[in-house]
Amino acid sequence: MARALDIMVVTGLSGSGKSIAIRALEDSGFFCIDNLPILLIPKFIDLCQGYQEGIQRIALGIDLREGHFFQHWPEVLAEMRKAGHRVEVLFFDASDEVLLRRFSETRRPHPLAGRSSVQEGIARERKALEGMRALADKVIDSSDFNVHELKREIGNYYTQILSLHKMTLFLTSFGYKYGIPHDTDMIIDVRFIPNPYFVNNLRGKSGLEPEVQGFVLGREETHTFLDRLYSLLDFTIPKYEREGKSNLTLSLGCTGGRHRSVVLVEELKKKLDRVQLQIHVKHRDIDK
Image (tube, rainbow, N blue to C red; front, side, top):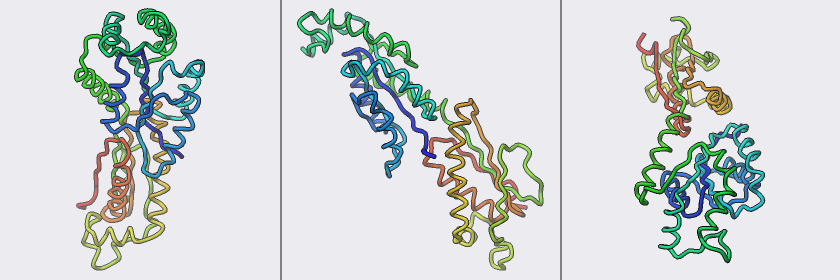
């Protein structure tokens, strides 16, 4: 199943700091695109999921250039969340006085002013964006921020959200001869892989040593198993997060908990390091 993405939607009043926010998120590693038609967002997400370089975080700038497409925003937002994506909508605002000063300083025309005043353009835009503001996860009023303070505010907010979204994954290796771990959510038996214990020069080594790792990982079925286990976690973890689960314990067991399960836990951790998870590894029986 396609992996879930972290999606930041940036919208708000003209002159309130949206462009600064997009640049700040780009500096934080987001793939950013501005003024993408709302109806094309699902297609763009599909492209990001299929991109070989593994895009994980995207930021979308949306404003009144969308025109009549705005009416579709609630259903598109619901569709993204239903698909398991972690979506945060940031709405940028500022007082009329501050917006007027910013337009005066930059000498830019307001996009909704037309032949009327900037003040009237701001009023029209504020009215038109009421629905977007109501759906926002956070409203940031930039009236009292300079550029550097606004960037810092965005960085702090993203850090806070990221820590909330991150699930803690506990990976445990164990030996069945010493009993099944009690504090676990998922247990997988890896005793289908040939046992290094029966190889004389490997018996006294552990799964942390290259010779044992080479023995276990040198088999096609090992990699097939890891790929399928990764796909299972890729599917289930976003669903657990959606239901509010903050941690998950996965235990891999072999006979003694010293060879096969240790190798596979270490290899799975490497594979999962690309995902935004906090991962803790424990080899319960490696010294027994």
